[in-house]
Length: 238
Image (cartoon, rainbow, N blue to C red; front, side, top):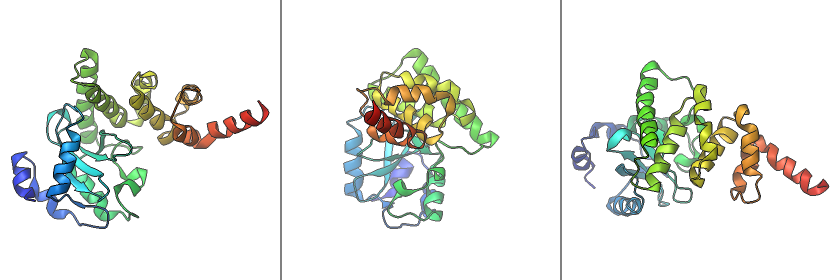
C-alpha cells in the first residue's frame, strides 16, 4: 500500500503518518482493507470523500475527509453502529491520542474525553473559529435543504451536534425532534448520556419512554440510568 502516493494524490500531509505507532487493534489498512472499506463507503452517499486509513481487523476503520467543509476531519466508523460524523480534529490529533493512550483493543475503547468531538473541554480561540466556520456552513446547508441524500443530511446534522460547544447546546435542541431516527438518537445520546444536559431532560425522557422507541440501550444510559429505574418501578407498581 503506497500511502505516500495516496496522500499526495489527495493533497494531504504524508509526514503526519511518520508519527503513528502501530499497536494491537490499530494499524494502517493494507490494500485489501482499504479497498473493502472504500467500496463499503460508496453505498452511502455522504456528499464528502472519506479516505480509510486505519483498521482494527474487525472491518471497522478510521478515515479522514478529503473534500468539502469536512476536509481534514477524522471519523471513527463502527460497522455495527454507523456514524460518519467527525470525532477528531485532524489526523495529527488522532495519531497523538492513539500513541499516548492505553487501550484494551482499539479506538472504540478510548475514554470519551479522549475524542475531540464532542468535548466538554474549553477550546482555544483558533479551534473555536475553525469549528464555527464548519458549523455555519452546515447550518446553511440545512437552511437551503441542499442534500444529495439522506446520508448526506444525516452526516451534516450529526456534525452540527458533535461540533457545537457545550456552552451553546440550546441551539441544537431542535434535533431531538428530528424525523431522521439516527439523528434523533445522536441527539438523545449527546444530551442524555454524554452531557446529561438538564434543560433537555424531560424531552429526552418523553422520547425514550415512547412504546415505539427502539433504542433500549439509550434508555438505560440516559441520565445515569434514571429512566430505566423509573420504568422498572412503573412495571412493578403500575
